[in-house]
Image (cartoon, one colour):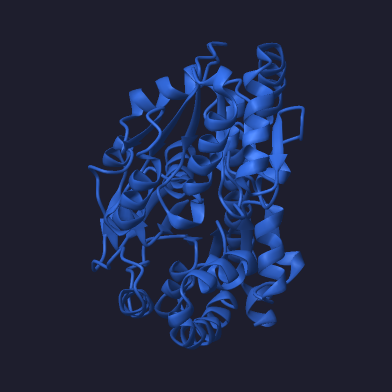
Length: 400
């Protein structure tokens, strides 16, 4: 089959870009990627070998004006789908709007939902945002109501929905965006062929994620400060934050630099290349994952595949992939709890090694091959349905 895939922005090395890359490069079907913003220098190099069509550019900035502008551009964007058998929209919110001018063709439209727009459909993220931006609340309420109205109409045009976790499925159901029978959980995975444990545990905790306020990287810094100041005998340990930083994240990045400047054992590495990122994972003592309410979480899976314990917030996606005290620690999102878990691991290398081995074993079920196999079988079923319609045109016409 020839499949069109739409995602608004391909410009980082994030879970979204990674999921799309693995889907497209490993599928037996032929994909074309349509996007409104593509930065080949800043995303995975393998994208340069894929068929990508750039549409009218939209901003990546998340101000109200820029978001509304991007939404309007997506909503009015027409894609030439004449040569395609199916359209799949990879959605985090605004991408749903692409269906408005592209849902009257003969082809089915499927959604792979990373999350419905998080700031409106995740109550925790919504509350944290409003607490931090009280003066913007009137604008937010107006934007939220307007967005929900159009988004619900968009979701009615999906014939089937894959989502990346039970957490995301619950958000979809709570918002009434799709019926349970049309939703299937399909976890994104990891490339187990390229991730090999070294069973090396150097004296640093690693926080690898995008620099975004909702990733809550400041919690890692505050927890490490507490750990460092309260445990003089463990000051050989360091905190390394290796993260993607884009233009929209610069203010938060500057804030993190200021927050960490009084502890010399904290190092922030912006936009590490692939080799450095891999090396940091291979040799880390343990991995920190501090996102408020993660949709799914590729970082915990990568950590487990490398044989590393994970300390993660006991909310959202990580609760589905991590077994507390067996493949990592699930803790409350505060510096005290994270610091306590770091101390437990720092004082017991045998525990670290034991959890590391458990983690590697647990990660094996999240191979990307399983993900792509299910995606391919779904599109195979669409091909079969289309074939049956062609074989029985009289019956199809009568039903119509």
